[in-house]
Image 1 (spheres, rainbow, N blue to C red):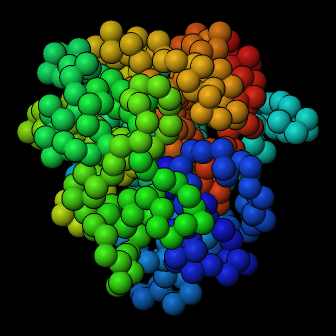
Image 2 (cartoon, rainbow, N blue to C red; image 1 turned 90 degrees about the horizontal axis):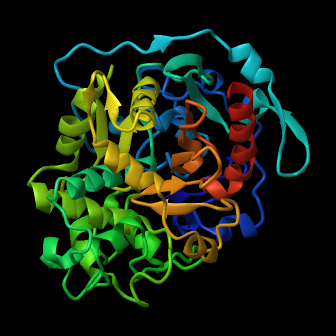
Length: 443
């Protein structure tokens, strides 16, 4: 979820930028691709952003310019709490659980060659470079075999996860369903009565989880009145202009979204569904989402670093986009998912919960959504399910964020990136053969 970033060679105003905002839709793939800066020209260690006391004016990254002036995101994505308000996700008082080091296979993997979507052959290292990768970690059967911080990203810094946050929110909801705290067939308004009369009226929790609840929510990027723009202003992702008369916080904004078609008939990826899911979790448990992640996941993983969630100006967390965490801790999380919820000598989430997610959902409904760059996929409980022979599945976020789990091969891949183009439609056609080649090498 979020936006296309254009290089500095483009002249772009904040309003134009907002009007280019893109979730994971096909409209980005169908539009003309922007001219991208070479990855080498926007290396963090050469940009010297935010260096000096104070930094020079042309090197300053702020809440007002980190989304409008690429390559500012290359610094911003691992300094987000310095730009926007956030809520702490504690790792707890326990010692970090060491990741097991296996045989270093970085040179072998970097040299791995595969055929991209255009028929050209490229190496895995080329793929990461073209992905504007900030950091990558690969685990095989629980051992780290590849770890790299590519562009001067500090190892200890949490990185912006964007829509990978949704998979954490969905996992928590699925666990609460397993515990009978939530009922997947209950109506959303049973949990959040504030949404009575809104587009979510009569939609079930399961429809919300699978994004088959239908709402009147537009994502027309050339329209300054598009709902995706109003959502960005409500969340505080971008500063609203002074004459903006809409809602400037998430909870007052969500009930203004009205109904559209019949619930349960079609899959359409919309981040506001996850914001409502976060509201359901808070109502059902009486706790902030950051507390739930800390208590139920982060403090049990043996994480090395605290994580955090970005919030709107009234403290509401971005349940669909706001989590920030470090590379190695996300690898721990991915390994926990591969092991069906078990990690650090304990069952962190139920194995039945992970199995339920991996089952996937309606592939035909997914296909009808027009996401041709993810052939054979479905979307279940805020996870992307491949339905391939290996049973691979992913948490994905714009600008190239990914946790890829391949249970058959014992493979976990975490990639953190700051690609100039936000939409997965731009990068995923290359990611598919890259992950397949990696699995074939390691199986």
